[in-house]
Length: 279
Image (tube, rainbow, N blue to C red):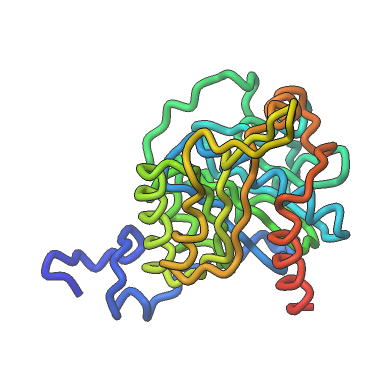
């Protein structure tokens, strides 16, 4: 215990013995049964975390898993746009219902509750963290196999609230090849370690592009650092996504569920095996 400890473990990220003795996890809605929960995290914004969340959710749904996405990036929600969701979330006396995508993925995001998707969310940290907590406790997720949590970047209020409130099974870390980004991503990896949550995989976005004329692989941001980062932190599964205008077009038009590509197949298969091992 720190000398400056105020005994409020719920707002503390310190990895002391006293904190580990306390379990702050809250149960989900009484009508929800969720088998596996994976957070998608990054140390900074702009590396493609929401894209990776969407692609993994699509792959798991294609594999026959009932899948959901909890969009915890309250001030910058992009999941509804990627899936082309225009309808608003409905509620009853029992709770709030997630919105279904075209293939049946269940999504809850603040943009599904706002009158206009461009309305700014000018809230302080505790209010944002409380909203994310309600997405867990008040949303009727139903019976699903895999829930992805699209985290905001960094290691602040919301990631801490998620890790302490929701029984996350593991995280997938998203990075890009730049050395500066790699350094910042290590902060997210270390936070997961402090919270005793395993890092299941590392996805390097914008790792390469393919020349449309000769088919040669070009790495505009330098050589991949994914394997070195994974080796340093004992992460067993890595993947690399290309720079591809089709990704941006699919997200902008709400057609991410139609994407084609095998870059994340290994990651999705690993997550599928984890779910099936719990059945």
